[in-house]
Image (cartoon, rainbow, N blue to C red):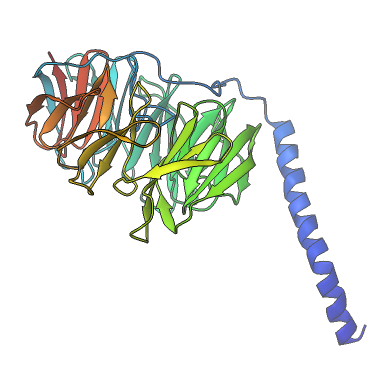
Length: 388
C-alpha cells in the first residue's frame, strides 16, 4: 500500500481503534462485575449520622457543620478530660466521634479514645497524614498528601477490613449502595464496599462532594455538578458554572439549596454562590474564600468573612444579614441546639441573636465537634472534652 494511502487508512482507523479499546475496557469491567459477588454491605443514599455521632469534617455527607441531636454546654464548661499528643499537627488533625469513641489522626498514627474519659483503646500506624470519615459502622482513613494514596476501612474495634492503593491524591470519598466512590484530583475510582477492589475508573472531576440523599454534588473550579449514583458509576445530570474564575470548597446541602464557598480571582466575585437543586443560581454573598460554611437549624447560613468588619456573619436564606459576631481565628464554626461555637479563644454564641454566651481559652482550637452533651476540641497537640 502506498505510504499516503496507508496514512489515510491509519487516520481513518484511529477513532475506531480508540472506540474499540474503550469498548474493550467496558467489556472487561462487566466481566469483572460478573465474577464478583454482589456487595453485602449497602449504605442507604440518605444515610446521615445517628445521635452520638460526628461522622466527618463538616458533620455528615451534607457538610452542614450542624448536629441536630447534640446539646453542648450553654454555660461556660470545664475540661472534663484532655489527651496530650507527642507531636503537633500542622492543621489540627482529623477526628470523628462515633460508637462511644473518638477516632483521632496524629502524626502517622490513628488512635481510638474512649469518649467518656479519653483513655486510649487502641492505636494503629499510618503511612502518611490522613483524613477520617465514619460511615454506617465503618471508619475510613484516607491519605491525602501523597501522589499514591491508601484508603483503609477499619472496624470501630481497630480491625483492618481492607486496604486499597489509589494512584493519585485522595480528595474525598462517598459510600452508597454497595460501592465507595473515591475522588482524586481529576478522576474517580469505584471500590467494592466489601473488599475494596477497584471496579471502575473514570476521568470525571468529583472533588468536594456533598449529598443529602437526593443527588451527589461535586464542586471544583467554580463549577457545581449534580451526579446520580448509577450502580457503580456516577451519571451527570446537570452542571452550573460561576460567573467568575474560582477555586471551590465543599458545598453545603440543605433546605432545597446548595451553598458553594469559593475563592475568586476577581475582587468583585461572590465568595458564596447559592443554587437550587435544579442547578439554577439563587443568589450569592460575601464569605472568606473556601472556608467551611455552617447551616443553622433554622435555615440560616453562618459564613466566616474577612470583609465588613470580619468575624462570623449569619445570613438568612435570602442572603440578608441576620447578625455579625466579632469572633477571631480560623477555627471552623459548628452549631448545635441553637448555639454556635468557634474562634480563638473558643467562643459560644446564641444562634438566633449572635450574643456571646461564654469564652474559654483552650490553647487554640482547630477543629470542633458537638456530640450529645459534649463539645470536643482538637488543638495542634491535644484532644479535649468540654462538659458543663
